[in-house]
Image (cartoon, rainbow, N blue to C red; front, top):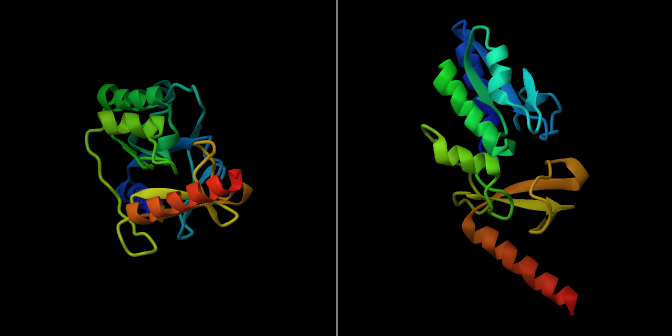
Length: 191
């Protein structure tokens, strides 16, 4: 969260295209932020070439639409299904097209997303993109806020900007401090 993943994806696309190479930019449809665009925090945006449906076979789609594609770029890869990550690996192995995925490792409860977990299991290389917490330490977790208040319950997937939901990158110290305060408040409300 807030590490510049989408900005780097857009730069990567530019680098390929500047050299006359075609890229295919895809993202899971469940990521409704930006609709059929990928949007970076610094204001850059670009229309995606394909929105991936849940249950869709990505390998089949790419095989049928790979005319001259030199690289596949995937935004918000954490929202992929595990089998779709396997299908992307088949794109690399069988079609010989590099696939670069950008996404989060864990959700706001520090649990892995199915797509991210599978990527961590089978990716050729993994590059961590770093960002910082408001306290200045390295951020490792994502805090979910509703109406400006941190919460630690709810559905795994809730898109930033919907229903007054925002996210904040947190270091472990701040994350667990906020979690502890949240639990204490919840306990007080039960009494």
